[in-house]
Image (cartoon, rainbow, N blue to C red):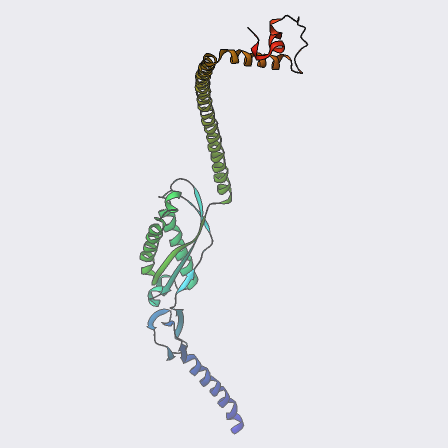
Length: 291
């Protein structure tokens, strides 16, 4: 009898253990549990601990209520000035209503796909109205905040709370960056040529002005030199006249000595004079020679 009951007891024990394990579940901190009965969502459990459910009838779906990060791949967006921009965003959100979330999206993967589409459409709509220079200014924060508010409003009926939408990276595509760089380089080269031409023109004007001033200064200096030279000659003649009037005899003798000095110098040509020449009188008679 015992041998026949033993298998039944073993099977019953296993069934009891399975029944107990199927009727219990653990809810951790930072999670919410949605109890689904026969495919229909029933209740939401938010308090951590050991919970009970009806085996084979109830199923439990766990949702992480902590902040989640969505970082979709970069995408190209056309701005208001027809420029293309490669934008990479990140979004932080949390599940606040598991019941609504289950009815609208069911799984986190569906939530990520739906939310990424919302961010992309809102971002394209906002950036499609502004040029690149506006996006590079302080108005960028206002544009991103506008996108965040729009995504938050659209995701609220899905049981989600969007807390942050930010631009992680916003770069021009490689071909666009190269084209802009080439255009900027051409503009800078053209500006450099204009500056060089203007500098050369200014240099010529400065040189011409300096030449004109030099001519005026030299002309004035030459004029002043002639005046000064004339005044000096007049003063010298006046002094010589005074000296001659004081002692004409000595003056004539001094002039004769100067003539001898210049005429009889080593570099002077040879002179042939007669003994009775007037030039020889001071050599013969000295200072007492009669003129």
